Image (cartoon, rainbow, N blue to C red):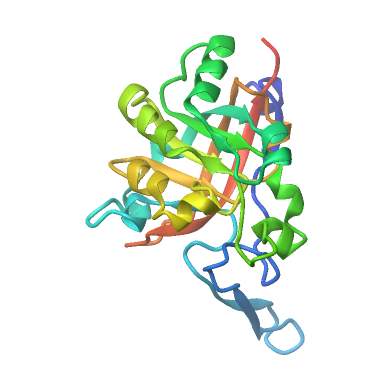
Length: 242
C-alpha cells in the first residue's frame, strides 16, 4: 500500500476557525456558543451553538438566491472535490478595496496554465483574510460607514457560466463572492452564478499556500437538509512534484 505522503506534499486548511469573535458578513449575526455539559459534572464536555447557515468559512448553495435551487444536501458529493485554479488579485486589492476578478484575469491564468480543468473551483486570492482580526478592516468600512471588499466581476461570472461550464465553484477570501459595492447593486454575481450544481465559497484563508494550478480542494460542508448554505472545513491538497 502506498502511503498518502508519497503523492501529497501538503494539506492546507483554507478555513477560519468558527468562533463568536469571527467578523463574518456585516448582515450575519455572530455565532454564539454555550456549555451544556462539562467534565466535572457530566463526565463529558459539550456545547450548544446558535449560528447562521452562512457563518464563518462556508458554502453558498443555489437555494441562497434561486427559488427552487439546490440546497446543500442535494449538491453531489463528487462536486465537493475540485481542482483549484487560484487567481492572484493581491496587488490590485491592496491598492483598491473594490478590486474585481475580471474576465481578463481568468484568460491570463489560462494562457499560463491551460484551459480551466473539469470540475474546477476558481479561487480569488485577494489577501483580505489577513484583516480578519479587525472587523472594521475586514469589512473595509470607509469614512461614511460603507463596507468595501474585493470580489468577482459580474461579467466574469457570466463568462464562466457561458464559456467555461466545467467550473463548479467560485471562492473568495473575503466576506462575499460579490464585492461590497456589487452587493449594494443587488448581488449580481450570486444571482448569475448560483444555478444548477454551481456553488460559492466565502471567507476562505491561506490561499497563498496553494499553487496557482495543480492543487485540489475538498469542501467539508455540513450537509444541512434544506440548507441555503453551511459552514465548511475546506482543505487544499497540494500534490508532490511529478
